[in-house]
Image (cartoon, rainbow over all chains, first blue to last red; front, side):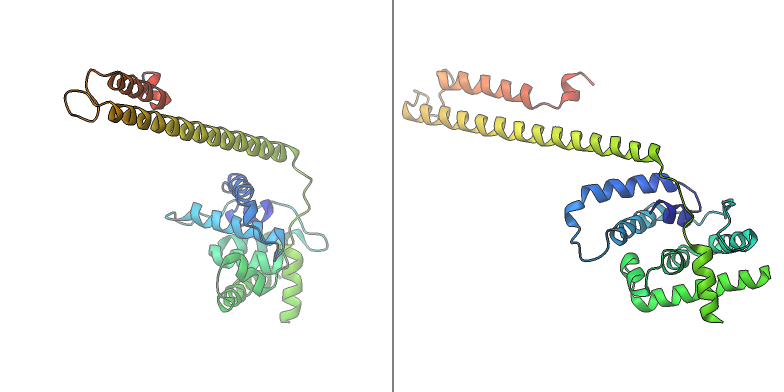
Length: 139
Length: 108
């Protein structure tokens, strides 16, 4: 969840949001019905917390991307993807992180983001196209 | 091609391995404990306030009933010079002091 927020916020106040998310989760622990994964429930709170923190704020410029290569892939490819991810609008970034990074299905991502399934599918498709283009440019 | 891209993106966007952050966990534990203490204190204060209010209401009712049982010469519900009136006055003073916010009592 902290990692998701760090990449979603591009490092801007991610720990504060994670802290707020954990506190909200602790306060509303009784509301968790156990009908999904606990991690998904936490991510839903994290997403809502992120949205309310960003309400009324403009998107910030892309922050420095952490230089940590993924195993089995060129570090440059990862950096290019991370940079392209940072340039995406928040909703596309979240859809990409949930569907590709965290391995959730479109339906699960839609539940986490509280959006219709079709919307999440198109957000993920747009993110995929942008990230794919970044990878093509890398080649 | 699309499957290949999906696979690449999954690998490239996989969350990096992180060592457990003990400092963050400790900070969260402290925060949650502080919040729990605050909640308990708030609950205790509310219970105390409810008890005080209930006791005050019962005493007021008692004084009113006593005054009605032996009405004074003035004909009002509580005669100004009766013990019930003195009791009500003292009760009102006590209630004013006891239920005033802490900041007011500190003079802020």
